Image (cartoon, rainbow, N blue to C red; front, top):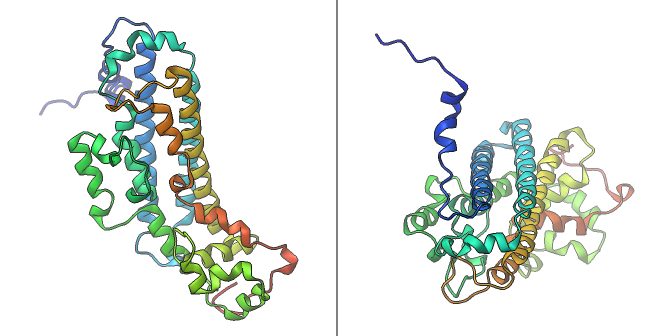
Length: 317
């Protein structure tokens, strides 16, 4: 029986093939940097997908008491840190003067960061809906992707039936202990119309909410009782989901400014109709790309602690 090869740093991490993945197609010095930064993006995107998908499955089809929130918190914290890190990587790319980019940019025509399958999967896995996206050159974003990648995106992540992270979080929030405490909500409302979207179904239907009315009530209940031991970890989950949104919006903002610095108003390398790459990116910097916008909006309904009535539902806290 052949002896098993000894494990080494190189063999375990596949360093040799990894370092052979940088293949510039021009003689420009800074193309090497351009390739490495984007490959590093993709490696971190892979980690984000790995962690977000695992958190989604921690919540999927489980009762409130059976979700290991400590695991979810740890992994979501890591996602936030990774997203902050990839934003900082843009600043490394900015050490390349625009003229240096011009030296090899024409060689990249047909390829574009827009086509990153992993970034699109992150957006879909979190919960961004296709019908809420900006069109690029009057086409759905999927039509600008490689045909094989488009097929993957059309089925992702619904193919396994688990839904998106926002879907499973919404179901979890709708089961918040104490959510059906009518006496609590009656006292907290105190004839103030601002709470109508959360308590009046007809008013809820007139809004542009992402989650169910019941999920919104659960989120508000957690925020109001964040000091109670029972709700401290749920509150951390809510905070981390908003942190992910903030990190992704900073990614978009930093990307916009970096692209503007590098190419001005030129067409993106993946474009065909003269659309400014920068203008398209600006169009995506809006609340439709904020996955957990509803959680941010819950701050509208918060009141000082002394005005929060005690809960009376025995299943609450």
